[in-house]
Image 1 (spheres, rainbow, N blue to C red):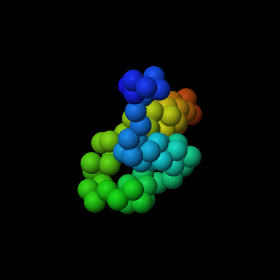
Image 2: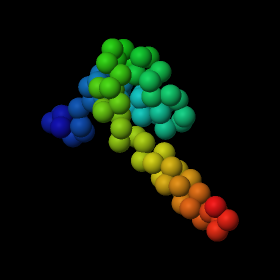
Image 3: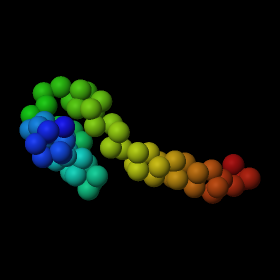
Length: 75
């Protein structure tokens, strides 16, 4: 906390994380975003930004539920 202004101190790193969040949440490929931000080890970037994919995981769950609901007894 910055004592003078009473607000949280924002670092350059925080801007990069915000950039990644905005890009990924708007459909950008996380591997491309990681390279764009200068990550050389993609796995580390995936770990760092994995929390951004909760809505994507919800979409995967919905697809799986839909597949289950569309099953036929003929198979």
